[in-house]
Each structure stands twice: as structure tokens, then as C-alpha cells.
Length: 208
Image (cartoon, helix red, strand yellow):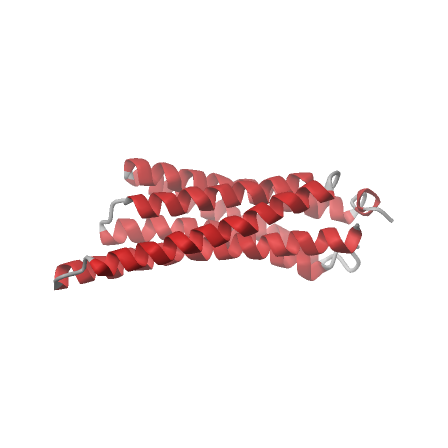
């Protein structure tokens, strides 16, 4: 049985739900990038609203899984995809939330990290869109997302080192600690889309 045949029934519903969920997460990261560029408080509030909408989408996926006894794709893979996609959105929200709380403005390192996370979110969304009809293409998008996670981690390590190399007094140390917390949220978002990419590749291998 090919992947197209497998997606004719219940899996078609799960694919649609996960695709919609990944689109909502992409929307949140796009809004985060706009927030970094403008510092507008309304954009931070919009990210929070998007995160709530994404949570509702995940609840629907979980509800459908709980009432589905048999699905050709491993239910654990569906659950993990839904969780990781949702957590990317969560970290976009917590990034903006802590920047508001700490009164921080975006610096070049943070902008670079978020730009890479946005690319990763785009690749995961494209992987979900292509999974039904073009599983190998979906796998390629997932692999690109995986490689982007490595790039985020390199920027993260450089950014943290740069923070503390210039922290010469107590106020600067305090500011460095605040920025490090924000950097961690962005780094964690990259970790989650890397995990989502691994699940996509696992599905492709199983059904190929």
C-alpha cells in the first residue's frame, strides 16, 4: 500500500489538521519576526492570540486520536508532530512575552536566530503540505529544517559568548542573563522543528 492509498481515510483528516496547525505556527513565527523589527506591543499580543488558536488546533488533533482506534500512520508519530509543531508556536509566544517583560529590544543575533527559525517553520509546513502526494519531497523539506536547527545552535552559542564577553559590570551581567533567557526560547523552537523533521522522515521511510 502506497502513501496516497494510506491517506484516503482517517489519515487524510490528520494530515489536514497537522497542515493547518503548521500554518498557524508559521504565522506565529512570522509575527515574531515583525515584532522584533518594530517592537510594537500589539504584535506581541497578537502572537499570544495565535498561540491560543494553535493550542485549540492541537486539542482537536488529540481528540481525534483518542477516538481513532486504527490509523496506518503510527499514532505516536501523529501525536509527536502535533506536539512539536505546537511547541514552536509556544516558544514564539514566550520569546515575545519575555522581551516585553524584560523591556528588551531585538539585537542582530536574535534577529538572525528568528530568521532561521522562520525558515525552519516554513520547511516543516511545506513538508506537511507535500507529505500526501510527494513524500520524498516532504522528506527533503524535513532534512532542510534539520540542517537549519544546526545553524540556529551555532548562532546561539556565538550570541551567548558575545553577551558575556562584554558584561563588564553588574547591570550588563543582568542584561546578558535576560537576553540569554530569550535566546534559549528561540533555540528551543529550533530543537522542536528538528524533532518534527525527524518524525516526518520516519513516516516517509515507513510508507515508502
